[in-house]
Amino acid sequence: MNKISIYLIIIINFYSLSVLAIDNSKLIKLEDVQYIFDSNIQKWNQNVNFFEKKKSMEKITNLGSNIYSLKSNFKKGYVILTPKFNTTEMQILDLIYNVPNFNFNLLKKIQIHFDQMKPNFCNSITVKNKYFINIELFKC
Image 1 (spheres, one colour):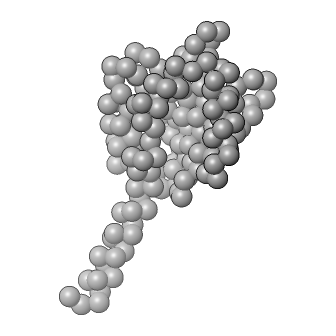
Image 2: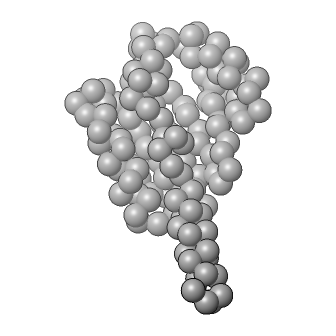
């Protein structure tokens, strides 16, 4: 194989890896969603304080609210998890994914991942712009 072919293969592999800036390990699992939905405000905030000790995570204090958000950083982008509670239980888990190399194949992959959580959890996915995807998870 000549050098141009080798370089072309390397460039294609590098590009395809960077396009898939979010892999399945960065998408929240059904078990984690179930655990979060079983939390109350106090338990959620305690968990956020615990996870904040990890280098890749940080607590976000929401002004005017006693509920923390959790930001999880990964190599290319981050996700912010914000639960929305009524007085007794969680109603919605809001996920904001920052994905610098967003494309429609990635959106399909994300949609398939969250659709697999049905019938336990339904979703609403909105693309805000070429960097942000908002996902709301709620019990079906």
